[in-house]
Length: 199
Image (tube, rainbow, N blue to C red; front, side):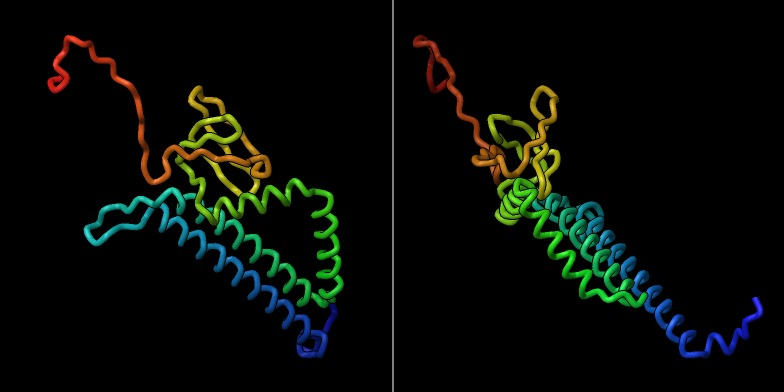
């Protein structure tokens, strides 16, 4: 292109450009390493963990619910932080960007109060371990197996096969039939003529 290559690279502008490019590459690499390491950790705890005898350790329902959510949160936080760092490396003043994002988040919070309520309720349901994947629960007069649970909603598979998606903000009472143990109470009719001990 007719440019003096070495002079361009070692000029002040060239050094700044390659320093910024190196910072962007390092930021992307670190972000990918963090996300992949978190994914590998979740996969290990959910499907590859074994005891001293080589037997597969089954994760608890709480772990099957919490680990994917934690991974998803970590992934998006890492991507957001990496994006801010990359913008800073490109010379963008990130202070107005952060301020604008804060104002936008506040406006979205006011406009989507039900979504915020869903997230807050889901967070407390998750922390208190009231619902976990695989539990049999009754929510809003709908009973079934918990197939999915996140900060937005609960997904139940009813006994007839139907799937019900219930927003967390509408959950007021949860009946968990399989919390730590289950019990069934039923009556058995015995004729008067029968020997009760034998029955």
